[in-house]
Image 1 (cartoon, rainbow, N blue to C red):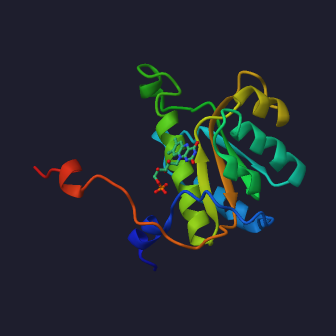
Image 2: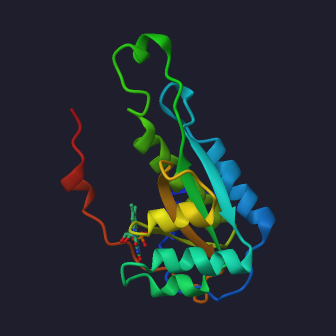
Length: 177
Ligand SMILES: Cc1cc2nc3c(=O)[nH]c(=O)nc-3n(C[C@H](O)[C@H](O)[C@H](O)COP(=O)(O)O)c2cc1C
């Protein structure tokens, strides 16, 4: 078994892709990692669209640059679009919680699983926060009301340098009682 903390430190937002095509088997493994992620009531409120057709990759990339940032997505080899789906909660919870109560957190976990698996496979990822949702829905043939949970650019990093993590110190964010 490898060292998980080493992998967590090696996973970083890749903003320099080589432009090479991304191996579909590796993309599938990333989705498999997301499939195994935990979710509230095991509701699994997600599905995934893997965009690896070069023409579609170019179009989805434009959506990620719609707000004037993320120029690096021009050389991404693929995108994984995480869709928010209906979550079937346990009957007792259904009475007190909205079906999507856990969904955002669940999707966050799935997204991190994708990024960690990609890092383990030598791929780079960068989560794209701002993107043209309407246009992506149109490109992927999704209903207008479909919630898009996340857009992740994936590709071969053109530079293997691992940056030191900029994070709050442990003492600042943890206390033991
Ligand atoms: C919800 C979310 C949205 C993000 N959106 C962007 C983005 O649009 N462009 C970008 O370059 N990085 C984006 N990032 C990456 C963060 O900037 C990055 O995770 C953070 O600075 C920590 O760096 P690291 O991922 O290299 O460890 C996003 C990350 C998250 C979790």
